[in-house]
Image 1 (cartoon, rainbow, N blue to C red):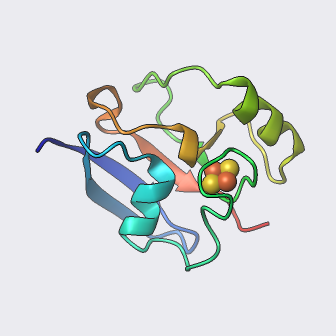
Image 2: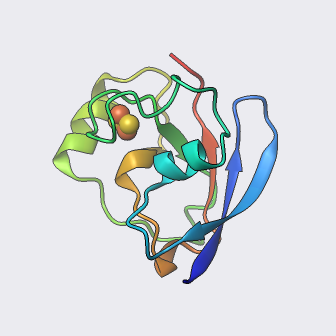
Image 3: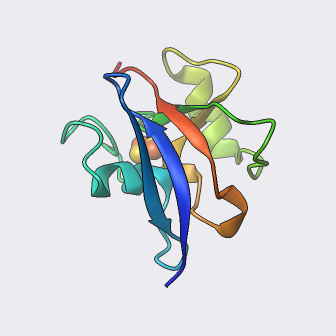
Length: 111
Ligand code: FES
C-alpha cells in the first residue's frame, strides 16, 4: 500500500489534503467521490469516460507537478465544456501515480 498526498479544493472553496492510493488504479474523479468532496451525482456522471466534464478541475501547481499530456478524448471534451481555463483537466483522466504526489487541484463549478 503506498499513498501520495493530493490537495483538492471543493466547490465551496474548502481545501482538503487527502491520502491517495497509487495501487488501486484510481483517478482524481474517483478520489473526489471516495472522500465525498462533491455532492453525489455532480461528479463522474459518465463514469470516467471523458464524456461529461463533470470532473473538470483546475490544476493549481502545474509548475511543480508534471502531468501526462491530455489524450484526444480529454482534449475534445474540454473543447466543449463550460468554465474551461488554461489549466483545466478532466479528473477522470488523471491517474494516481507517484509522479503526482503533491498535486493541488480545484474542482470546476458544476455546469
Ligand atoms: Fe465524465 Fe470525467 S467523469 S469526463
